[in-house]
Length: 303
Image 1 (cartoon, rainbow, N blue to C red):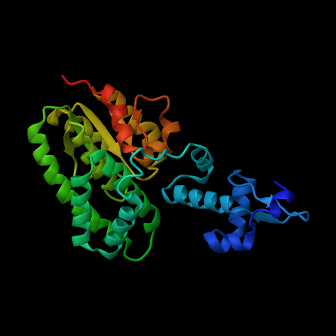
Image 2 (image 1 turned 120 degrees about the vertical axis):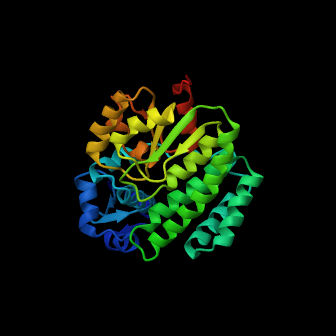
Image 3 (image 1 turned 90 degrees about the horizontal axis):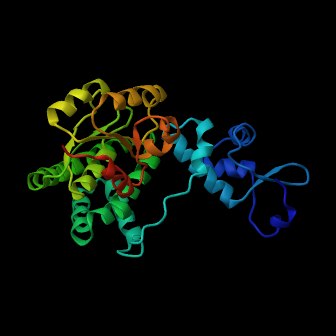
């Protein structure tokens, strides 16, 4: 793309500077452009590439999807999907500041601050709001930044342990007080941990489900037995990763056809793999947790 009129109005960056800013080498940037159509830099009269700030933002979005295990050939379709709209509650509660504090507490392993922010969020706001505005954005940011950086595994395990204890206690008491449908929630095996399952379980419990949360992923072959013995009314599988293509395309649809109850998919995996399941009976709910639960409810029939 070449538009000399824009050059005088926008700051434009040569490919070497974009490579320095994003950590993506020039060869890869050219491949993303030529082979996959992911970016469209402007050109000088001599044909040199120039990138605007919006191109750099797009490259960062590409990296986030790749870090979740999405093949580069599938990223373009995800980039073209609209970003989740800001919640009507965004102007309340100084959420940006709270998210920053929560991220800092996780990175510093400050468990006292983590406890304060957790209790404060659930005490001052509806559970759905606290999840939409605080916990889901923070988990997304953490999973996109952790990668292989030193201390990432420790941060993840500490946060998982913290949430497992707090949410587990909440689920125990809530399950005693509700006669709602029984929702079996599990993490898919390719995920690094149960963060998505934990916050989805918290949201589902608030919606009146009796949540049966697995502490570690069951094999897909064991889920029919779990459904029978636990008398579940629906199964909700979660993951923050793309997961294996063969599992998504073959094993999940096969399982959905075997189960007498709905099988649903939630979390980033549902956004990443929605096209792979369009012809299956798996209910693809998306990665917006409150909206996903809205989509699930009409599917669940209590016996």
